[in-house]
Image (cartoon, rainbow, N blue to C red):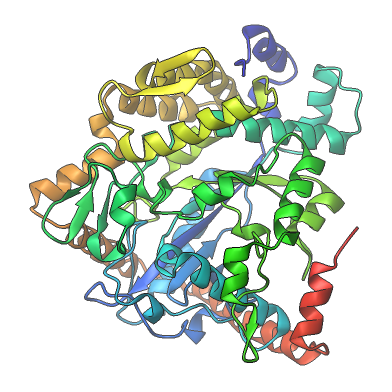
Length: 528
């Protein structure tokens, strides 16, 4: 890839500068485990006061009944995004009795794998499909993996950006094609440089030993056992992003999912969804009248494919994600590389989101050649290495032409982001983007200040296990949230959303006319 030169950035300035980026929509999807006061996994059903996990627009569950997922509506200001997340978390704390939200990405103490409750979505066909999909994940990868939490950042460039972009660079394409081409260029560059995100923001260098199953230690070369309960890597940034966090990652790398363009992406994902795989065939699909998984294919559905970043289009009810992309093109991108930070009550902070905006702008403005097999090998190597050894002094990464010191490459990327941050600040009339960039430049120069290093330092200073550290932070965040109850108008807003979602779920269940077998057959038969 080639970073944008001064001429390209100057040209943007002449057409309105950073205002071309102004108004891009931001959203968050933040996962948090519900835990008991003693830090054990909550085994209670999803609280009815929080509404229906099938239809609630802001509060649902991910894999487990205990793994809450908070979704913010898209807003033009990152500060508004965080403010909404703060409100939805405060509403949740007020409605889960004495339970807490676990403050870290890696889970609390876990018992037997089969004791982790799989999320339920009611008796409708679509609700049962969501449950069976998660049942399949448990059979394929184990339920422990599905208790890991993350933060997803959703971002779209403003609609006014695309006509200006097309005119500026003389692109002889319809606007939808311009948008798709640019987003896939952004995605390729994010893969190339995405190791920078866990390096700067990774917050999972340690885990509870209860998370490990026999043989998993081999995935953590050089791991240390602090107290019989905590396993950590001294230079790790994000064990969540390592092979122990997503044990399907290595196998799925062989799928060859293409990011060349929209059609190639959809075709390669569709191939994986339609191709049986013998290890999954051995699990069985429908055994003794009960579904163990949706199918025995390499991927049950698109969401099973793990990636740092995804192209997204809002899907209609019951519509496959790939069909939605074919129908409407790329509407926004979903960045999936963020750990839940125990140092932030919301798991993420405003400077972090401002940094990501500049980083994504760099990815879309830079030239983005297609990724060949050799470069893909470099990308996979770098992502794994940074997750488990990112802060190691003298660490070197791979790129075309040989190896490069991680510290040098990080500062090179940050320098390339500087004129873009200046451009964005011109539109806002302040220094929010430059300040966010300066903050991470200090982390790059002094990796001992990264969240992953701070976590290990604080554990050592307090003589705490990972569990004790995360439990203490969870208790702090709970006290903070309960000390700031929502005003009545906002509380009523969320109560109404919960009530409406329950009614919507009942309406879906009452409208079902097909058997589940027929519903699945129609779902997978979707074509444009």
